[in-house]
Image (cartoon, rainbow, N blue to C red; front, side, top):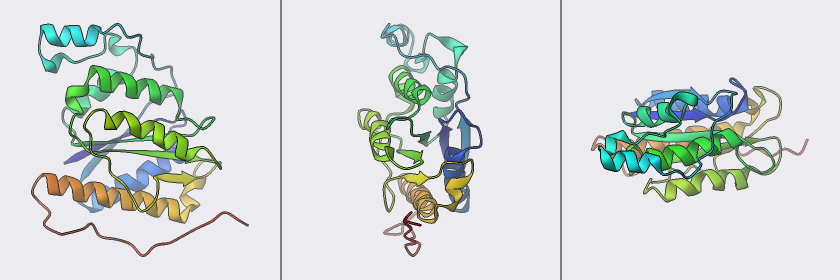
Length: 214
């Protein structure tokens, strides 16, 4: 079992990475492999609705589902990786109440061109912000998964962490617990799907609430 985590931040080791890394470490403890793939800080092409990906797949086979923009960005790499992965988690910083533009372009193209590699696989979104807009960005990333028959993995709260300076989100105690709970729920779901786990519910940590009035 393997989960692909996409770091949609232009900052390689920023707060989005901190949140995703917390998930990855907890998945490892649960016996589930993971990989964090960084989207990079270069432009990701938006979909131009040419529909050539569907035309090529129909003429050849579903395995030919690729974006015609080829190797101009990481979209086809993600599609290819998802052929061997069992689940996906997208992580993004919040810009103007929205996910990063590069990540949105990636999500739209990978699900449309490579949908055959995503259908039926569990998915989740994670957003990180300084103060506000995280829930709107979170909802934006979740919605496309629902159109692709992908079960959404939840946590004890919305999958949100807070922080501004690099690495600061690690101090968000409740946010990091939310990431670990998400990882536990993902691992439990995958094990259930593979007929491995027979427990009635994932393990739970005692709740560690945190607010930001200082």
